[in-house]
Length: 435
Image 1 (cartoon, rainbow, N blue to C red):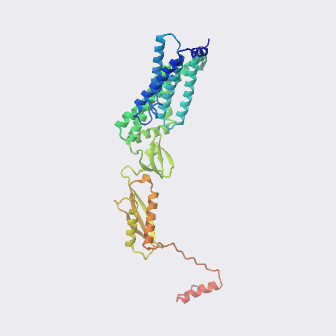
Image 2 (image 1 turned 45 degrees about the horizontal axis):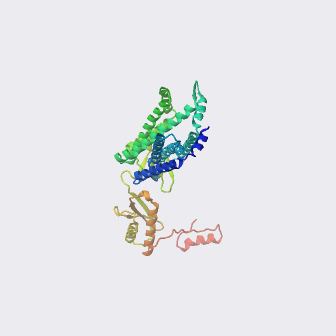
Image 3 (image 1 turned 30 degrees about the horizontal axis):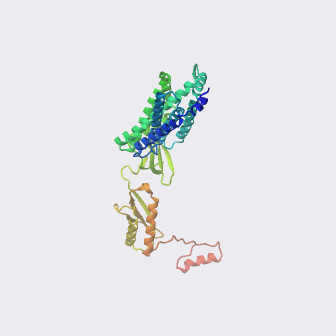
């Protein structure tokens, strides 16, 4: 009799309704305890998820209750427990899926590769649960153990490779969980600076991943002494072919430790101005006010000139030009320009706006209005447009002329009457005729 036939036979036992009630009670009890434990929790969490019961705690509690109920039934008599036997592998698979999904969501919230790994593991976990229920899992493992893959002179079974991948993956996910928890609850409380907290989190995560990988490789029987050759080759590669990449990584840590650039600073690098949105170990991400983003290698930030508009003072000086007629009262024009600038809410009162007569131009009196703002991250063109509109309105209401550029174009004919008229014009004016 196969495992499936035995399961179908056991489902017809008279005690199945009682077992169903016990299983339902275990699930309700696990849900209630998860809700009570996580009702005050806010945000995404590995234990509670986004909605309190979609984290790791619910399947673990349900698995513990179901396993305890099954042991209690088996201790009372030898009657089969098909429903609880079905629930155990399903809850084990659900706990593994929830653990992987929640850790990847917390550590990599917007990574499509993490979502792909989550879906792939979900399919594998449910397939393993079905094979477990049908009793085919030992046979599948035996068949995988008979398939060998050659690596040089070594032969490794397919089962050993799968077990190595699963164990290494479990260790990596556990390490990511520990690093995320330390970064959220330890570094967030001890380090107030966002940039320093980020570099400490990256260094801690890299250290834990290396240690976890070494433990995982050692657990599956990999000789760690062979990694020394790989380390020497990696050093040679960094010294020759990867020197630019290594320089960018070192520059990234220098930037984060020195805090010459911080996340949120308004900077100008190579004629590109924007806000620093992220500092990676290899590059710095700068976002302009128009939505464009620039990926600047960290070596460029270290070795070239960078204007940090937020390092010492966030105030930025903006200027706008206006030309009025020569008949205008300069004192009145300056007063109107100053009042127009102060009408904009973002323009600072101290230092006060300063209008200056900068040129006696061909078309009129050229004024330049200087004013300061303290929040350049909110845009400069919008506040300049607001000031220009206020200036235009004030000058029109005061009746001050804003002259148009005027040019005189004279067309001289090639000869004839035009030439005679042109020669008579200087004589009529009392000037000598051209010779």
